[in-house]
Image (cartoon, rainbow, N blue to C red; front, top):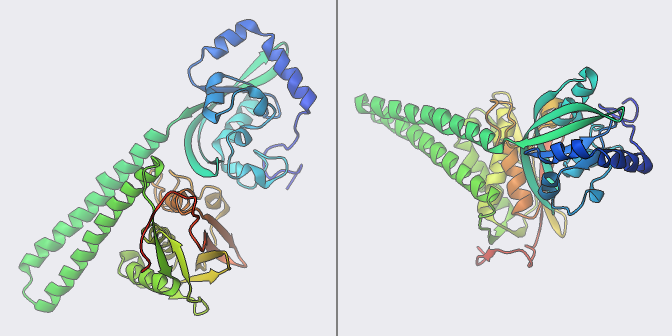
Length: 391
């Protein structure tokens, strides 16, 4: 790490320099009339990538009344990027920032002195909830009173990315699955051997379950993003829950020729949460782990009772490349296809926005890859839920 930064320069302007830049811009009346008439969310940055002016659209987006609350912040800090607090010099300096389109757009426009446009995905934590952004970022150099600044414009392209993902899933993946099911049924009509017929019927049932599961998952994610997802709380037994989850994933195509092993040290304890949503979270983590595991390999699943909280974990023996680690949990990022990426995103969305928990991971040569989901053992009474009778 150089200059106290993993990527962009760490140097920050002082408060006095930020105020001076803000005053300089406020004196540019003709420029400000043009800038404030721009359509879109925009800010003006100094050479150290710090905000020295913004339009009202950015303030409205961030839910703040005046620029004072974001003056001197870098874009990721203003938008509460999940990763910006990881290093003392903030946005642009963490090990994940090299893969961020926003800081890359700014740095390229600084280097070339030209307009630069890039796409980026940002996860923000706003009022304790996860918000996922798909943005087109434009950085334009401009000289005011002999000093160079950068106009940064943010365009929300979330709908465009979401449509691309849905087209991929419903017009490609599901069409392939339905086509495969249709082929199996056609073969079934010609088969006379009872054992072979039973095998085709079982495979057809698996394909049908996968199709239904995919549709239900996307309906849940849409409801979760809209804030319409209902949480139903049950009392759950840990080992029964994990054993049931293993049985479900074992019948899925991704589980074939791979084992999911319940860690023998997992204790038997009761806890309170939404069984269906937690099952969705753990199954998505298991799917990702199994897809990363070689044939005839295994994935470990376990839980810990930590008193007030409980932790569930999924482990596999591969290490995630750093460029993938930097983009995990982002809605439109996937290692499988550029228009997919809802697995880890849905895990974080459901866990942190609805199950009142936290998701974390480590991935290195020592620990390999472990995803953890930590929840309250007792459901918080202040949370709005429907509470079911204990099982």
